[in-house]
Amino acid sequence: MNKTKEIFVTGFALFSMFFGAGNLILPPFLGKNAGEDWYWVSIGFFITAVFIPILGILAHARLQGTLYDFGKKVSPVFSTVYCIIIYAISISLPAPRTASVTHEMAIAPYFRTSSLLTSIIYFLLVFIFAINRTKVLNLLGKILTPFIILILLAIIFIGVFTAPNVISPTTFSTPFVSGLLEGYQTFDAIGAIVVGGILVISMNFKKDTSFEIKKELITKAGFIAGCGLLIIYAGLILNGARFNTTFKTDATRTEVLSILSTQTLGNIGTVFLSVLVSLACFTTAVGIVTGTSDYVKGLFNNSQKVYFITAFLGCLIGVVVGQFDVGYIINIALPVLMFIYPITIALIILNVLPEKYASKNVFKVVVLATFIFSIPDFLQFFVDEKKLSEIQNIIPFSKHNLGWVLPAVLSFILGLLIKNHSFSEKEN
Picture 1 (cartoon, rainbow, N blue to C red):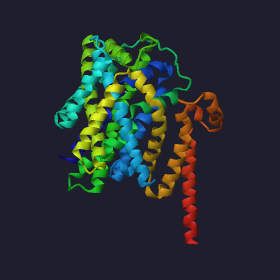
Picture 2 (cartoon, rainbow, N blue to C red):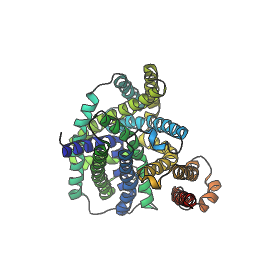
Picture 3 (cartoon, rainbow, N blue to C red):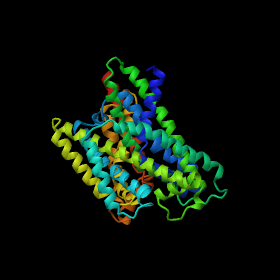
Picture 4 (tube, rainbow, N blue to C red):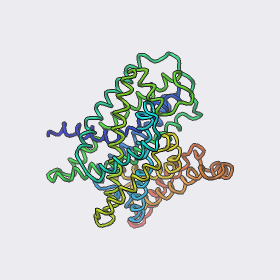
């Protein structure tokens, strides 16, 4: 395979890894609520759902290690705990959400069965595929992704020329921040540091490929994947905004995507999209359960028994959480994401920076500051708002759930100053 072809193949593979079908329900709904301010929402969404994840891939291009390597400069204990938390979140929220999306898009509109039944059958199949590894899923992924992309591009293209001329005003008080925080729900930053590691491992099998060649390949593939995500997300947000007068006020995320596809492609197009999205959801769920089980297995001397137990527990969690509607799962994910996403963003940015700007001390100071100042964003879901208001009034941007940003930047500058001061003293 020549170099250019390999870059594009890897880029499309990365794109399909990011392209969790559950993510498709977020942009149109965001556009619906953004209305005339859809472009501000888009910019915010692009930062956390495209830009930061691609930086995560670029960080992997520099490190060429595993998920563990992202946090090891803080401390080995921190990195181990962080890895466990990431996999625990993945198996408890985005994996069950795929079952919920499947029920709402492909089952509920056509059958009068309960979401619990869907969740049980869905994760029984996930478990069977997870303990019987097969190339069928990889093959399905390669076939499904191009079909879904074609349908989405058709929805976007037709929507641009057939949308009503009237767009309702935004329902967001701060559209940019709303887009930024909705990007958390894609889990793409978390996905970047997980799938990037998988990509590096797969490349390490090619013994004749040098570090620099792999770095170039991963970097360029990351940009290709980012461009793909940017086009799809932008088109869906735009059409969600342009068609927002045709949706019910209380329409859910899955309803907005289904209605948008019906208005552009008709009923047959909607059925086709529902089936493809469901299959893509399934491959995502199997990938998460398999990846998590592999990680836990590695912690226990590659015990196959541990792999089996982890896969079983993961699917059991999937059944319990997956029976709830998508909106509910998104709501319960919010506190968790407010806590882990800022730390993930900080680690991604620090790992992208050149070594001279990201020493171990800088890592420790920045991650500690990010952790401390993201606590109010996490606690707001459990503590009375009045009790937190005094703290939030002191911390800049805290009322927008971004109280960690300025402390992280200042701690980074402080870490650099301390490092430079120590270096100067050694020279003298």
